[in-house]
Length: 317
Image (tube, rainbow, N blue to C red; front, side):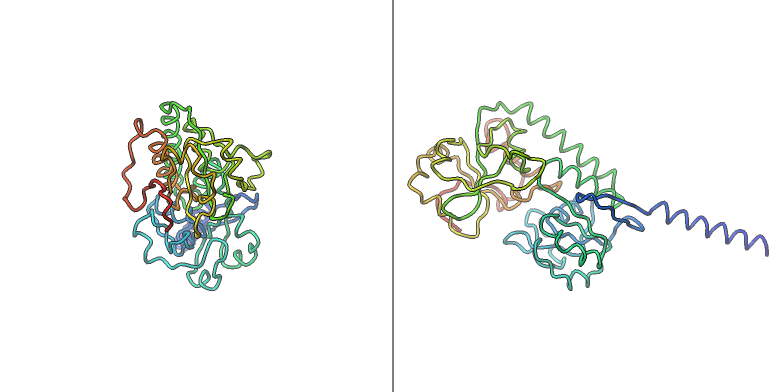
């Protein structure tokens, strides 16, 4: 009898140590600690980054937020078609979020931090900056720890870093570019520290948007630029991000005089270019960007035709 009691006690102690060994304490981009009793399995993605990251390590989120004009991230195919949509990254339906019973919420910090208390009542809340390339690397690594998939996520970061190093070595440079968004009279242009603009630098391209005085602050991401100023800087290539409205600035009399317009090097790009922090999105953007900048040197990546960038003709959606 004593032996059985001792064995049961030892098993109980072993189980306790096993649970404690799986418990995690992580620090998110707010500098706040969050605790998990075990690696997360039911993750709500309040960002396309979360959906991308989970898909990359063979997991499926219990909920996602809308992806621009799409209910689900189109570049991830149909893998998430049956996953519940819980609003947008800035306006989450907390009732629906609670119903899916997540054990972790992966969210973009600047859109959700205001609701931290309400999120934390539902599940541990991990706030991620997701602005710069370093943010992307760190978020992939941190999420990997939370999921118990560190080996996989560290491999994803290493592979992407190697890809960028190879591209930078091969890219000849001597090219300037602008990343523009909005449908207003004056387009919004991105600063150097914004992830997609950082990829330009890694391809030895000058981003005519310039740099933020204090890039470590992260925000703002960019600024409104007058067409007269854009003409002065005259980028060789212009990438147009998706807009919900007709691009009024393309009707400005100055627009046709831009070198990129005259040379047919203005491209409309996919929604994932605007939200490129995820492991799959950043690879797709870097490879396609390299091709559009240096078409004779880098081949078009193997992506579905519906996701490919295409020359801007002036005909709005």
